[in-house]
Length: 285
Image (cartoon, rainbow, N blue to C red; front, side, top):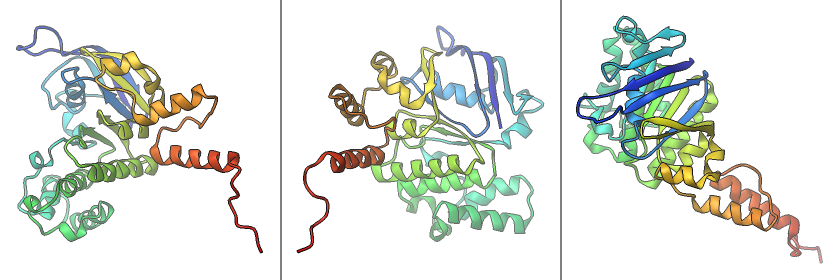
């Protein structure tokens, strides 16, 4: 499902200048796009406009060729799901299963379809054993998986993660990003991540950088890390892996384009095996 944003601006009464200024971009179906920028740069404002969570904007937004208007917003919202930073703000039921079913009931789905979707997405998100628990009994990572299950059960074609990993510990964050990677590989979803997280960014196909409500960069996600000034303007800095790769390149060692920790470690190990004089097998006596 393609997204097209055409010269969109957004202002509010309390702001001295537009929060978004003449934003234009296209996201093809199946692509995963990260949106980066400092707090106040307009990231969350932008994604909230994509399903009209904010009331109005200048310019035009098209979802799968249909302009987002007051008349089309209902049908378009059925195709756009959002996951927020604090999952507690998304829970409406007394149990996890109540929360998943809530949205399905609003769609007037029959009971068998609802049961099938609950079972399928609870299994997909590894929360089947949590369905009868109150959300307050869950860990942060479990809460976010439950919130995501409720979104996916609605079967949207676009899923927006608005700082969805920002409040999680490292283990839970890695788990959620792994689920996002699986969603990307499935080919069923167009994904948008508002994020500051390195792993989340490098997992995506493309990155949009916002500064003061304007897009200042639109590039492949692994290319953003070579631009120190741009990173600084977005409140980011090169990670250890980026600095390590730079030092290796300086020494004439090429590892390939990946910035994923496991792939870099594997490449270093293969390099060691090729260049080390130490035998990798024990000779027979």
